[in-house]
Length: 249
Image 1 (cartoon, rainbow, N blue to C red):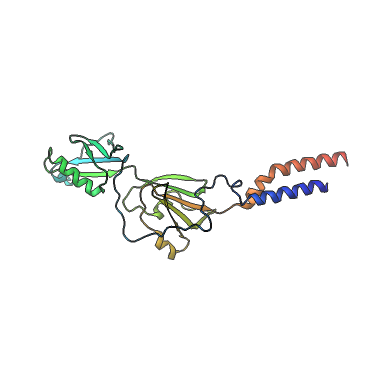
Image 2 (cartoon, rainbow, N blue to C red; image 1 turned 45 degrees about the vertical axis):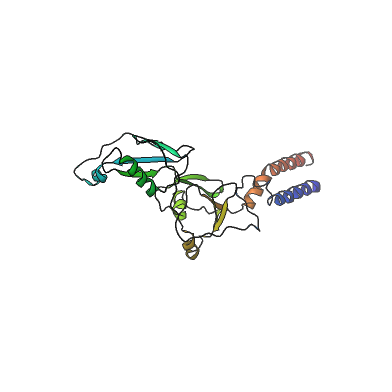
């Protein structure tokens, strides 16, 4: 009997030791060490989005400087499906009438002005409205247990808005440790934010960029994980003790 309890003690100690190892948390993502140096975040100025390869564009062209949009007595034609135009890997997009044009490197406002000049060769006083429909951020709101792709539906899409879109922060997450991963994933910039208090949240409610990764660290669930690991062994031990009591009763 003492031997069985000794084995159980060794098993429990081993599992507790593993709780700090990657073996115990194989699904953990974007881990940073204690000495990791986060990038300094510049909150001054908001960078406008620049069109890039593989973006999907919603391009609408109107005549007469867009008079059709403000003429309240004239109903706009309804379309079953709005066509999307994809920017190819060379940075060009194929549009009606003007064929292929290079569009990457422009902000949305610059692209609209550029396309108005191109369409002015065929249309009188063109007015162009352009929208990038595939701008999105990736939000892991409970560590790596819950992930969402959130599409940016406005140009002032903030961190707080992204978190609200995924239902906020769970009770097992750390509001004081939110990582933002931005840029080339081979050499990313990593920032950390604290939104636990209003004072800190004012510094964190910034405008996101397309393809940003937001990772809310989750609190370790040591007790529940240890119990989950021990459950099958406890069941086995209970069965052994039951059989032992029968034969040595």
